[in-house]
Length: 207
Image (cartoon, rainbow, N blue to C red; front, side):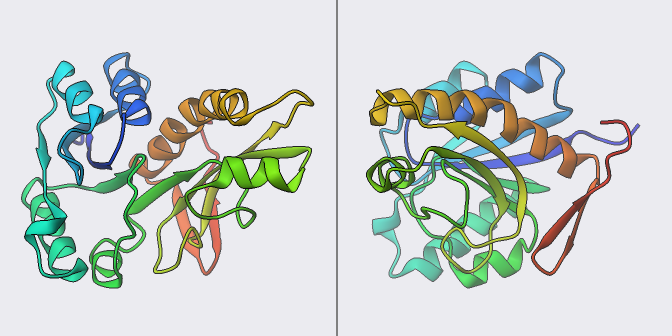
């Protein structure tokens, strides 16, 4: 039997998606192993969550590097040192540079709280509310050199209800994220994703 898929997770905040992935692994829903969690924020609560699950974690200070490229090279070094198969962005609030993307081409995934290409960037939930859409959602995508522009792996819709504010809508979006992200990671780890241009084909056998 092959070894479990080795995940490296980049975080900046509370780490709820990271912890949800860890729980999926522990409960047998995802055959993978989180080998390292890297934060660009020293006091990110995600590091506390990682510790609770016995996951190796490290803070890498962006201010200790002369530029983004140097910082990204250090991240890549840590990930490669840990033999990472898939880089998972889970609330990571920095853009990764082109050198990093090239080093892990089609091996970096991100989750976004909107139906891309609508409402990219860090305020997708608020932007959807401000625009007055009736439906928003969640997108899991591969990361490329653009801002939330990589090929889409999975999407699911979330209705915007009449009384919604940012908190209530974000809560329902989180519920979809917790279901969708482990599923996309499982597809990758099982070798069931094939990228052709902007399209991601999924081998549905066994789904």
